[in-house]
Image (cartoon, rainbow, N blue to C red; front, side):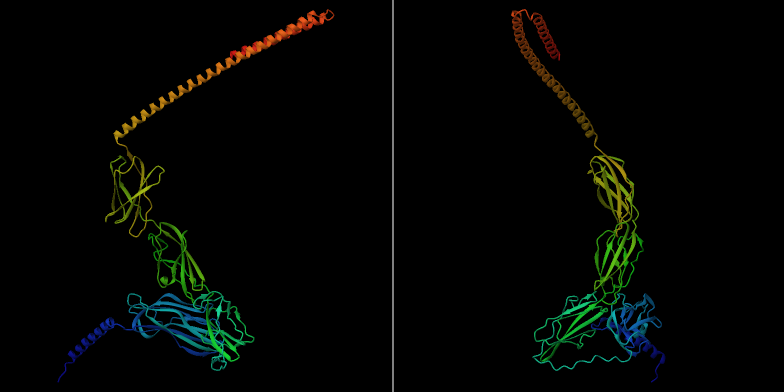
Length: 582
């Protein structure tokens, strides 16, 4: 049988295409398909002496799904290792969102990058190479504090499943702490200590206190206590205290995750071990800046900002944001991780945004930036009447942005302004109509616009519209006003005449009373003088009957008495006459 090679090749090509199509459909439709990625180190182990340098590379594995972004934070023991440099040679990352960086003081390495289409698929794609120098002996652990691998699926799905680690022996092989040989726990041995901490009470929380205190109750049968703290969750304590102590304080602990181990001994032997986890982070999150996606000046009333940062140890918990003079509000740290944040609706003007990034231990870093919300174009009022009569229809026309909300403001004098809202059409035209509800008066009118985003304009210049009363109301008002004036004048004249008459009456009463009093005074004085005259006359007669030896002196006295009497009478009469004149 002769086979047509050309047709055979064509058939094989179609078969391959068909099989690939079927496999693709099944990979999409079949449930339970696992597509996972991992971040790991290479090498994962090694032995080096103090002063040596060595390299460890970070790799990504995504064998069954294309990935297009990877990020992570690597932690290393800062007391044992220091980073001399980071190399990007041979990296599958083609665009770095954040240049690889390191902090020897914090013991962290950060990287974040993108693989352009079609992404990366494979078992070992190098991301970065870290060059270390050995500072002191011991065991150095490399691990990922955080990480992500995003699928090239258009949705940014995080497909990271595992984070690897590495362990290096420094200064030769470090001998482990010899464990004390303990007999099997029997029923008579004491139970495990109940450990508590006043400084780090919650084993699942982070604290920014580097001084820790632990306590445990002691029963009377406890003979010794054995203690230890390290980074191993199952260590055997080996520091013995006899007589036993009931508390332990540890100062100046370096940042990290630790375990405090305690064990009791009674006369039967050592009992069970208690392990108490405590976590310390005294470093603030990494410094960061606030970036505005639309620029620091924008007419977008809800500007988009980026202020994501990292914390190498405990991780970012939340952010506190303050805009201008408003109060602080909280933003969940997970919302901002590798994402932007949209600010609440802002009015036009300049203001400052203040952001505080808090880690899970309560440490925080602060950043601030100024931004300006620019107002959009003001609407144009193109047609309005200068004067209308009350009850007439008022029409105001103008132009602005299409499908926007136009607010028309009205104000009479210094009274509180009020507003009405209309919508502009698809061409930006708007018409406001009032069906005779406005009261009489002189109105100042202006307009503002708010577009579909919520952006606002400044107010337009004010226009003036006079709302007059109808003619018949004007005449009636004039007649009413004139009649009111006449009535008021009549009332005033009547009151004035009444006051004059009342005053005249009061004066007449006063005059009559005064006249009566004067007359009575005159009668009383006249009566008194008559009585005085009679007494003086009697005295004179007595002088006249007396002898002549005092004739000259008597005559002189009589003349003087008569003269004094006449002067007094004349003076009194004159005063009474003057009173009568008044």
